[in-house]
Amino acid sequence: MIKTIFLIILIVILLLLSYIFYQCKWAKEVRVDIVNKKIKDEIRITQISDFHSNILKNMGYFKKKILDFEPDFIILTGDINDYGVVKKFNKAINFLSELSKLGIKIYYISGNHEEAGPMLDEFIEEIEKLGIKYLKNDGEYIEIRKEKIYIYGLSYYNYSFKNYKTNDENLNIILSHYSKNVRDNLDDSMDIIFSGHTHGGQVRFPIIGALLAPGEGYFPKYDKGLFKYKNAQLYIDSGLGNTLMDLRFLNRIQFSNITIKRQ
Image 1: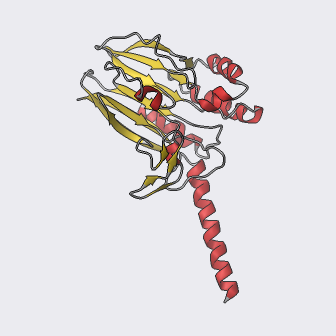
Image 2: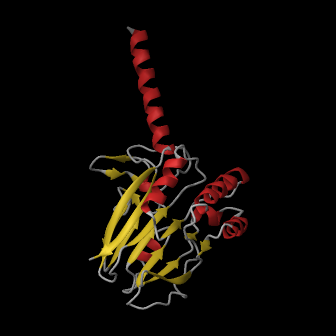
Image 3: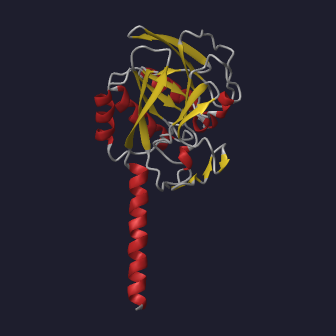
């Protein structure tokens, strides 16, 4: 009887560990629609956040889903590299090298893990070699099928809106690793905020949602997904990686293919 109980417990533990490993290493695509009255045509964006120098076991699926979606551009909303040690640095650069081969314009902002680490300058130098645009408290105007878009990217620690210069006619997109940095400084002209940082809590439960998220505390309101915030919309991606340890429960790692549509 004792042997049977022990065997059952062992099987349950192995199944749980296998499930967690799957949640941590096999990325899923999330499709999101955001409506906005400023645009006439659709704008397609792929958001990737919080990779944390992970290793995707389904890299082929990941690249195929992006290519099938045909995004107008890709946004990387911080913590792609994880504290800058050489091994993790190389994993992040290898991942971005594969991403850059897709031939799609990519914008990047830094997160707390990159800025707190010792290799941020080297990381920026390498991603710029890959043609990835680094936005450090700065913006860029682009036009896609006659749609005028302004993208402004914030740093994590020394974030600033000093260079935020746009108008109400543009679709104004803000990239901020931590959404609270924008929520506390929201401008009426800001339309859509794309963020990460929370990992969706990593561990989630039905109805309750996340138990804890970085910067948002216990049972956070802004943990993952699409939210209305004052006159703006906020989308938080729960990320492609993990911190401290590989742990995900009911919250598989993800990337988001986002369509902005006419309201």
